[in-house]
Length: 513
Ligand code: FA5
Image (cartoon, rainbow, N blue to C red; front, side):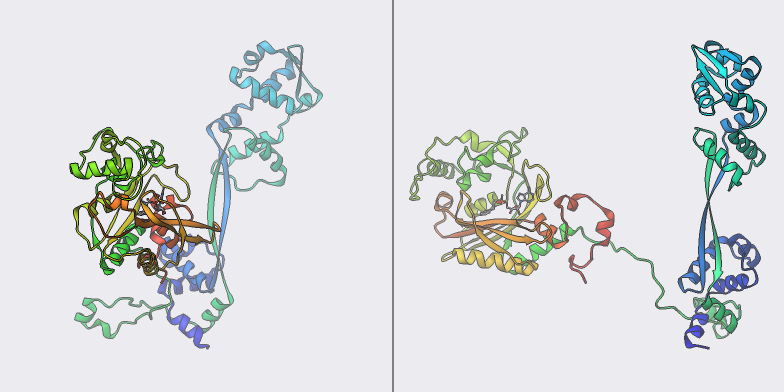
């Protein structure tokens, strides 16, 4: 006996053994028959069969059969005759019927006349001429004999439990009947049959005992000493176990937590802003002129409630106004327009996190190293890389000697820690100089995708805030990082709550293990 067979036998469950023995004695036994002969329930028979089949000991065949029976209408036709038959009966006697008298003469419902005439024509039993129905020769021939579909009706009536297959001579009639509505009930019946495979034969030749085996050692077994005489079924450590989906954080939350940890480890402290912000902090403090395109209704959500926000410190507002209008003492000539307090008071859903940076600069003394993670809002049209509500991480470093090199170095380091390799591209923001955008290559789209904007704050931003040291800042999109990390082609997937996708995502920090 091969080792393999010995091992297979030792691992057989008692139900598998019973099933195999039963199949040996009755090769054609159905699952129900096996259940009644062995005393197993049908579920155990099927599960034992599935297990034996997975080990190539038996073959399991599934047979699906249609069972046909008559509906209520079908039975009515079988008893009283099809409507065209009722007409033919009258025609056989009278040879013709005026159309207008059809329902009454034939004793059929008015609603049925259309269908009945259709079938009369199709069967070529009658012809209509100038409002009169005349019997044809074929009609005369069928007057005293059943058509094929009528034979099937008879057959189904005689076999009220249902018919699986129709004999050859009934096939055409069956086809004809399936073309009519509401006559046939169709039920699907699935049956299983088994066949012992060579490996099963070998096992039966070697033979085995059918003996209860313990699969678990219980407290009672130990207490009563029964464990000494019990026979144990060996574990199959290769058996497939059910997949368990552990509860876990949403992938976006995972990446946000990871980003926070990276910045905290890089020595940044965290600040938070508000979703509702004044246009002053969101735009004006960033030297964005009041007629800047980004402020337009298409890009920004303006709020009715609260309609306006308070402006900060008078001196800051005055200096900001001067800088916008003339450049004040920053060395620039400003935007050359009349700055309006009313526009600065408008309340908006923040369009980026950069207002947090200017507010932070105003309220803190350098050296500063701050980051902030939060939701921002834009009137965007959805597409594979745009959402109207998304997350940004803002970063700000302000100290003596801080340079553009430090900005590139910080961003490179941050992305590297997250596992991304990025490239920098020159860019424009009204509040920074030099400015850059980080990008990453998307293989599937064969294009570069923008991850974030960054730059050195201009003097026009820093002076009014009372800062006389250089400051670097950046605002990076988080959903786009998640898209790449989790290999999602469409950013909307992150908010779809697709349970299958969420379940199957790797658990630890979203990184494939
Ligand atoms: C800004 O928001 C600037 N405030 C960044 C900045 C900060 C520049 C400090 C200089 C100094 P931008 O509009 O490009 O930049 O948005 C930054 C990132 O947010 C984008 O690169 C992108 O990754 C992400 N993002 C922008 N719009 C969307 C959107 N509709 N859906 C998803 N992510 C978006």
